[in-house]
Length: 357
Image 1: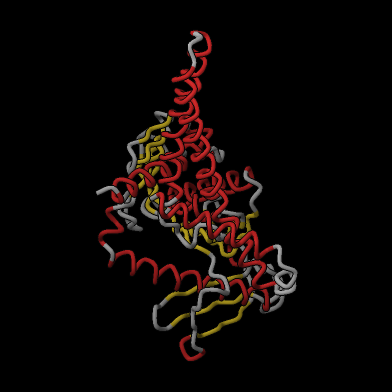
Image 2: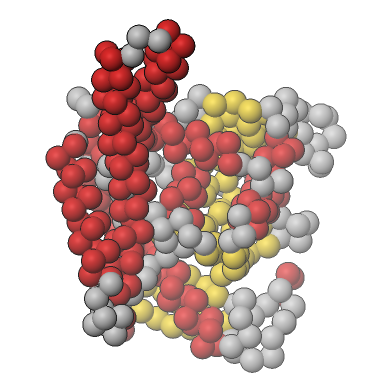
């Protein structure tokens, strides 16, 4: 590990030196690449520098202890030695985590797709509540939320909704939300007071940027344009601005009507299609890599039940990490950071264990 850290430190110093060269500022592409690499390396380099300083503090304290005869001074040196040793252990664990292979998609924006599953109208109502939960969470982090596609039902529910969350590192935390979410509660329409179980599925996909080559052949696509419509089919737009794309090879159909311009809806629809095709590639690769699946929390399967929201008991349980929290109201209002932090910690622990095998 330490040889690799020394190499990273040397690379970091090379980057800093190159950034100070006058000609680099004139090459925007090179400048951006170096700044990104510098940003990625900074946490591990700073931790390694502090580690080396703490190791030196240990050596200095040991040397001074050998020469010091005053008991008060010896006690102070022993305390400093203990603090330095503790900090070295903390930094070793921190550096191991920082050296874990990075998910190349972690810094990207995300496209989230929520679909009502078993449970009819109750599932659609829950889908709308989970959508609002994510919106509140994103807004709390000052991330931008943009609706791309939505199919509503008249009572305030959503059969499906697709939206983009734009923010630094959005995918790194939101990726843990993919899977089946289950709700247990008494529906408002239930006169007998029986608890019903309904489900929704959540898919989290990284936004596909220009660095990723997803080719879509013209012959593989059908583009339909139509008038956007609201609930009950009423016309909400007098021009053919809504766009539907059908991708023949995969059968994927995407629809966008949230913008007034057909051009904007077309761009949104293609962005969503690219994200779905990229996500399909990622899932196929993931399914083929059994070793990777064993090093992650859960199976990574879209059909995996990951969480239960039990309203009568006011609890939320994440089944992948055996975490139960009794603050359902706060969670439904967007307070999901504790769950996400626990998922990240469990994922890191699993990968560290795999690395140490």
